[in-house]
Length: 452
Image (cartoon, rainbow, N blue to C red; front, side, top):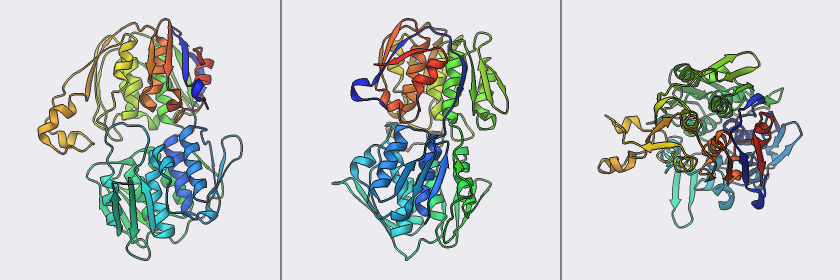
């Protein structure tokens, strides 16, 4: 990990990226299964665990609660929850990682009480947790919030969590995962309606079912029959590959007019992304080992709108934007998941990108946008930063840029790699929250990138 003095990349751009790269395990799976391990009464082992800041922060948080966490080399991690003794999360720890809010589940199952502060993580908008609070209420949990301390205090109103039926007004993957962790140890049957569909959630379900849980999908719902205990699987659970990292390297290959084989990529988890590549003329070839992405002819402009699974992921739109700076024509991106996901736009402009905001025309904003819209009168002000036009092909040049969030950080690195001249990307510790050894992987693909 970088030090404060080494929190930037210096990149000599204009390189065509080519070669082979293996993506790491999915951050959005590891964080959740580590928390799920607290529901066990015996050690649990996971493999293909990336060494990234978010995982390290979570392990520190778990260790504060008496859980023993040990890396065993080659991306294997052992979690021993038998010393788990606390139902309170430290404010500083929680401020560094948003997933801390999911600790409500094991705390309530083990102790009947949880004291957790407002979660941290990337600031991609308000990201309210009201849906999660409503979910807790459905499971018979009373929650109070103290604005003077920033802490939520939740108490189970019965001796054991009771199964519940709850329908999310809008899909939420963290809310769905929290519901799973509550339901798996609750008494009786639970049904989570309008559940999120991400493959990362399916991996969590797979892990829990291998551990004795009884969970299955039924249309847009997830049905859970609670069990009294969970047992560690006979074999360590292997974390699936990070599809967001796959998309990062795919966009890097096409934006740089290069050719990259991404090992670990699974086409079935990227169908929406791959269909969009077909539309713009991006080339790819799937195999059992992964997916090859390469540039063959000028890319065509297109319009995309982010949406919940199986739609175009919000995490994909930033690297896609860099690729569209090299496409012919005007492309648009309409962000509907978060209300502050275009923080990278001003930074790309520093490198010469031609990107402008445009007010989207939306018939029913309350159903279109996944974030909460409380006042219709303020609608135009809220959504005027939700759509961008990208004009290409535009040659990018070097410059100094600052990372605003995790995916935006990787996006700026891609942009600097294809820009002519020297660039400095500040704040790479944010990138390290979700990418393991990004600079080394890019170096192997021909990028001239060093930490400074």
